[in-house]
Amino acid sequence: MLIVFTGDGKGKTTAALGQMVRAVGQGKRALMIQFIKGPWSSGEDFVDVSTNPSAGKRVGNGVFKLKKMGLGFVGILDDKLPRGKHKAAAEKALAYFKKELKGGKWDVIVLDEINVAVSLRLLRVKDVLDAVRVIPEECLIILSGRGAPKGFIDRADLATEMREIKHPFNKGKLAKIGIDF
Image (cartoon, rainbow, N blue to C red):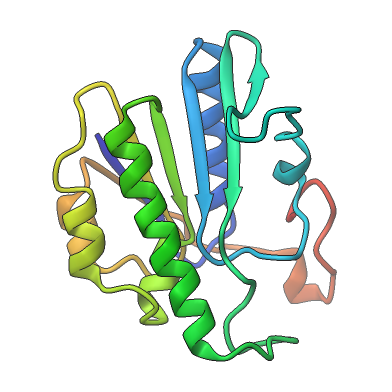
């Protein structure tokens, strides 16, 4: 099954993490590959604190693993990296996904912010669609991030758009630990 979480509202990564928690609670193995998020820490970074990072963190009967492969925001804030480094990181993350999918050990794989990587032209829509062309029956793949291309939505079995109605940022409030990151 392929799920797409997209839109300009908050909650795409949060929804994907919630899906992972649900799966792990049922004894499943869940992997999140982060395509954009880099050196900044988020709450999910501290969940995956295994003594064996390649195996992931045992949570209840399941396994949760986070693989941060992005180099951070592209072309905004304090990003001084050449675009080519971001592109190479995204391509490496996609190759890692293909290897992990083929390995067959994950029940859920989240490609966090892959929609953004595509909209920034770090990856091509066709290459991602080729990577998810065949999904094993027992596996769930989630593509998250703003600006999902039409091809992702057309291919998806389930697509949800998060739409911002109200956000504290619009009143000058800064992001909060444990809520926004």
